[in-house]
Length: 392
Image (tube, rainbow, N blue to C red):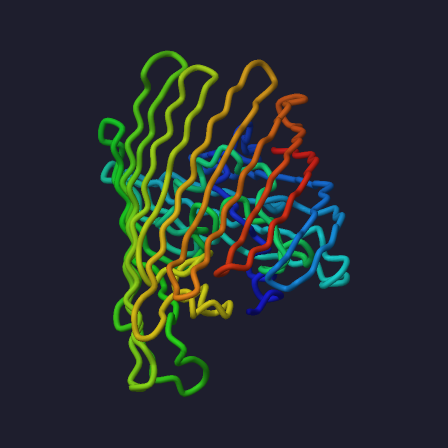
């Protein structure tokens, strides 16, 4: 298992669409002659203390770190210009790791997770470039703990290293890892929207490297349908259904072909200060963390296919939060099961208190327990996280 690669690949974490962030608002830099330019940014740092009891590696240790949470730090730039009946826009964002003291000394990672253009009209929107994908997108973007800390363990190399914590990635949902894509989104149809995209595929087989015979004859196909409706002055319901399909084939008879197929789904209900979230996924040939191709590149191909068959997996997240004034309290539980011969089960329980100091600054106090079981051996990691977050 390539722990360092997992950390490097996850520097960006489960970063979400900026405008979906609580309290997030872009700062306008220019607005003249139908042309607009704005910038947004987010900064977070957590003190964390993790106690790991690891039967898998037969280790037991306590580690303190000062690092970022599930979300990294970022700065993003937004552009738009209205020309006749079209609005042409774009976004570029740069995601930064701050905890590089032990594995990436003075080499702070900067990732470009969004670099895309858009064309909007009365018929909807076309997005072209690199962005978060559609499968499991709303599962994570509507996570009540998105701005918290979440799951870490030594087995996946998450306690140390310069990567992010995982939230419920691998213990309830997949991370919609940014890929190049061409995606069409419908206009709002009475609260109902559909997004359909072709996505750059990744090789999910073990036939890799120079001279490989494996191929992806078609792109990856992803889609998501969402419905949102208000049910009063301060209440609303949001529901969604996502889809993923990809095939990787090899001309080497000793290598298994992989047909990946998945569905993601969920509902979020807001009733005044009370918010309830329930989401999940199921599929085959998906892996554990980031989806087919990407998980294979992390050395987790054995969780995608085994003995010539795609591996089944499923997971869910259940959450409740209550907000009043400047306070918000959250309880959360999620788990993912990967049905290999030696089954993987990963679950995360969280409680958290978010306090808004003002419209920009927020504090977080969180306690979480992550339990990763591989067959009969398991690692249990208990973490206390204290964080500061500033959103612009």
